Image (tube, rainbow, N blue to C red; front, side, top):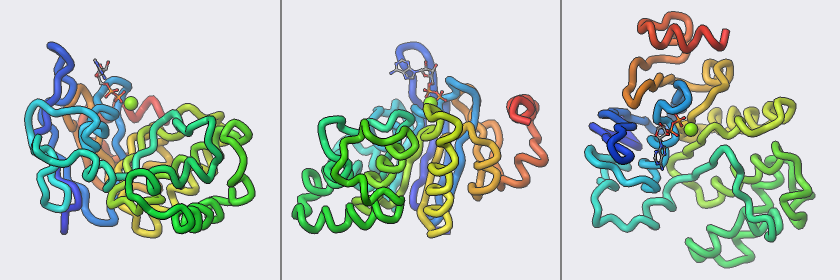
Length: 243
Ligand code: ADP
Ligand code: MG
């Protein structure tokens, strides 16, 4: 197994409150891992530390063997290797859909506009929103906006996609299309680490499920096995609430 991402002993406190208490986690090439756990268990913080949005107190993060938790690392260059989508789509309201999708490529990666737009239109086409390219985001439904946010994250060909509860803020009717897109990306071999409350989706799409509680990994395993046969009482208790 070649690890794309390798976390060792990650610790993080906010003030006196420990939030991540020694996380070891590996993500292999093409692997899809679902991060589940109660609200406040540290899922978002973990995703944010990986993308260097949150400094860690202890531990090490390797991205294809490179220590990206080294304080001397070029943060922007590292962030450019991840695609990140949050619960709230964070599209720029004053920019067109296409400009939202191409902005990072143009500004951070210095891709010429014509080439960035060609790729942007391809991505919008694949998510079925090519005809919305010149609209502003507020003309789109929440589900469409979230798919645009995913297209934006994909535009720079990230090595790992980090998804933080990307359907939690959506009208339940709009969740399906977003999950379908993630399912397609997973099937194409995209390496994905996703925090989610969609248990059925995690079971279907993730290769591995990691249950986080109180800042520690309580249990992890192949999705089918973990859902069918949780070993730890905390996991059982958590999963019972979704069945
Ligand atoms: P989850 O995503 O699993 O719901 P979070 O990572 O958001 O959990 O939060 C874990 C804990 O860290 C919570 O107790 C939360 O209140 C706390 N926390 C998260 N971000 C901050 C912050 N910037 N400052 C202080 N506490 C924070
Ligand atoms: Mg969260």
